[in-house]
Length: 348
Image (cartoon, helix red, strand yellow):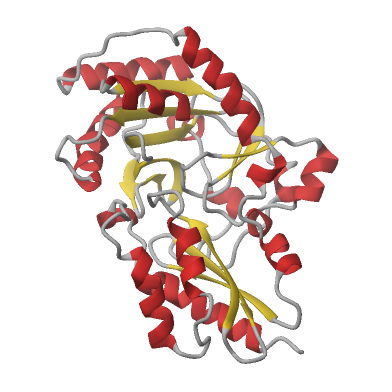
């Protein structure tokens, strides 16, 4: 995806792409606290590959080879259309494609999820990814073997707070299960092409050029690097907390899951902070800047904490699809307050 984003930014031409995962791996969202979602030591023991998506939000997911497909509509900036409008434009196209392959019962619910009787089949999300706007999604084609995944997954508190199905293993479903028979990547790909054509979006098929192939090799190495995978790490935050500080973590589930970590000094001020979560926000450093803004605040002063979060998160440069996926200042504040309370309850 970053390779194609660069091409859109360079040429000013939109790109539609589909793909199927070619290798089994765990896929961590840009803002995710990897230690709250995965046991990395166990992943290493089992030989399970872990990557972190560059700039793309959302939560941690398990993708077995050829069990899930992706699609993305990468649109040049400066089109005068906001993310919510772009999402509404492509939602009926995706629904049309799914109906063409026997998935007529699937509908959009919640935070842009594709669900069947309350169970998640896929998603379509909108995000500003710096170089362009991305309207991207995925679809579970068939059921993966979850035995290895269930050995390493850590489900964050409140992950299923807003969901009818409360268990990870039964919450996720697949196209084969919904349709009552196999649904291939090629079938969904062709259905999506047909739906785009009927919507008046003309496609000009092409292969990756040599520069894109080179970029792909470079990116694939970067996203699996340990420093990238641990870019947001609760375990590292604890290890690096200032001496004598109390550390606490908390989650808050609004439309999306927000997570905060605080280290509180003996004087009651925030000595260090970490912000994380399952969300789609741009620019990529938004949560890092929000965490930095909290340092020095009085941990018990909710008005000050909110003002510091808002100084970053409500800035003109922060962009997200507000109507269905939007995270608010108050969502982040709730996680921060919870982390402060958790830290204060820690024995000195």
